[in-house]
Image 1 (cartoon, rainbow, N blue to C red):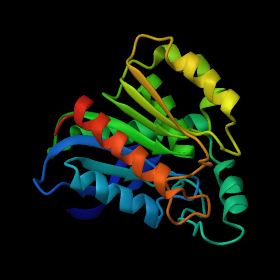
Image 2 (cartoon, rainbow, N blue to C red; image 1 turned 180 degrees about the horizontal axis):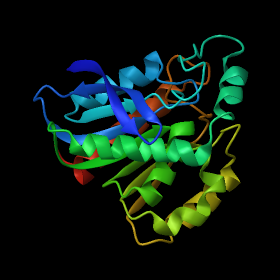
Image 3 (tube, helix red, strand yellow; image 1 turned 30 degrees about the vertical axis):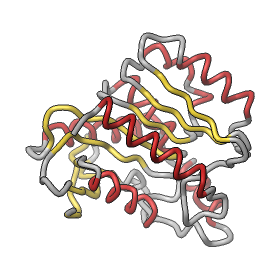
Image 4 (cartoon, one colour; image 1 turned 135 degrees about the vertical axis):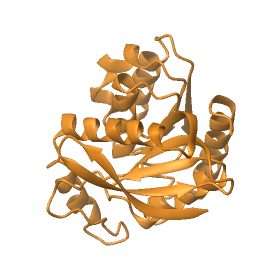
Length: 234
C-alpha cells in the first residue's frame, strides 16, 4: 500500500490529511476519523489495514485549525486529559463540515470508484455518525462513538447502512446508554447492526492505549471487514 500526505480544500483553507491506496491502486473510499489523540500511529496502522483490505482511505487531521495539531502519544500518563482538553476547543459544527469536506474530496479522487463511507473511533465514531446524518456516505462504521448519546436526534437522518461497536464495561458510555443508542439507531429506515463486547472498556481497539482488549479488538475488526465487504464491496 502507498501512503502520502494530501490537502483537502475546506471553507477555511487546506486541511492536511493522510491517504492510503490499496494494492490495486483504486477501490471504494473510506474516510477514517481519528480518536481524540489525533491521527496517531494507531490510526495510521488502521488506515494501512483498511487499504490492505482494498479501500482508498483518507484520514483528515481534524485538529488542523488549532495551534497544537500534532497527534498525542496515548501511552503517556496525561494523554487523556490533554486530548480531551484539546478536543473541547474544536468547534463541533466546523469539525463536522471539515469531515464532510474530506468525504467530498475522497469521492472526487480518481482512485475512488464511486462509493465511499466513513469509519471512526471514539471522538471520530461520534463525528462519523454526525457526518452520516448530513453528508450521505454509503456506509457508516462507528467504534464507541463518544458523542452519539448527545446526537440521537439525528438518528432518523442516517440513511447509510451502519455498524456500531460498544464495550459493555465502557467508562464513558455505560450499558444503559448503549441500549438507548440501540433503540434510537435501529428505529430508522437504515440497516443497522449494534455489536457489544462484554468486559471491554472504551478505546478497546487501540493497541497503544492501556484499555486495549485484544479479543474484543480482533472480533470487532473481523466484523468490521465483513460488514464493509458486504456493504461496500471492493
